[in-house]
Length: 568
Image (cartoon, rainbow, N blue to C red; front, top):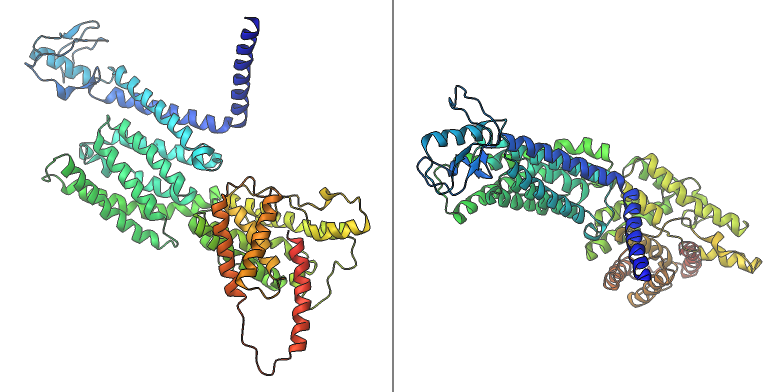
């Protein structure tokens, strides 16, 4: 018995310790969730105090003369006033189950429902329980298991703020006579605007989960009416789908028109499904069309300040950064032209490979363009930049050479921070070499000192944590190494690239990025097709000097081979 008790105590102690550690690591996110729940609870409280319900039943469900299906007891004293010149006493049985409702009793029910001092606590409790379920759903959806990555605090803050806005508008919107009714209420709910902002700033998966959460929030706010819930869900999913294809800001205008038309269709379909007439459909149809169109326009206006404040890798921000005429890339072209050409090729490889595996191809392309910007500090120490001059590392100690090579990673990250590049791009820059060994200089050092420490010749970066980061790593090493391959036919390229990928797997550089073997095969095939087209054979001109050409090609091959080794 003692051992069993000790085992139980140990289990509960470990459970408590794990929970405590989790709270310590995620206290900020948990605090935001708690504040959001409390804000929603406050909205529910004021909504319940103004909603005309009694014991969870709407006052519209009662009328004089009908037989009461339950007994309702007054919970507070209500004095007579001008609108209802009749008093209600605490503890009074206003209506009795099985007895007809008298005219006087009906007036008392209406007085209780309209009184701000009478709060239907059952409605309040039901909504609070439902919000707890929505909170649990949000906690699950935004976990790394479902989201595929660790959620950032700024993402949770903005999503929580927008949820409260949508929930509050849905709760109090039907208090205005113009928006009363299950088809009129969607006109004022800003779900389209909020989903558009979230999707563009944080991605489609985040936008999809946010759409589900605000739809359930609308369901709770609208007294669990299905029509506002279904409309919000359908409209939000439509926005997420449409925004997946946009590339320019002008596309938002056309997307807004498409959303407006589809919103009208959704209302018509819901009227048909629920067998409602179209006699009063002019206002809701015009309203949801305007809501869909203006949501896109407002999102376009709000995106720029939000992109600056939150520093996110939105599609529009990435498109701006991909401009090869930007000052940094122009400087890279002028000071380190070889590195610039290398970066352009890596960006093309990474973008195409990410498209094949369903990753963020635009993010990979932009990150690849900037992944070596630190080489601008000392471009002459990188082989691709001194094809016509001597290798600067020839007379240097391998330890000094490797410190110079490793420094470009730190300098690239520093420059990325100075440029205020999004965190996703900075992470890819920091991870594109992992902690791999710079084998060229390590082997050179071992020739002089067999006891050379391998750790001194490793990059100080982190392992790739995302698929985009891993693809950029593979594109980087493949582009550099394939330059040294003689007669690069498609078959030889395929075999060589397969060896390079297997070497990264063996070195455990891809352990944290969730790439599957099937995806690696697609990446390899994409690299092969692009590089085979790039290195395709050309017709030799009659007056070409084959001797000089061979010598030149040999020199370039040797130098590129050095750089290829350094990139491993």
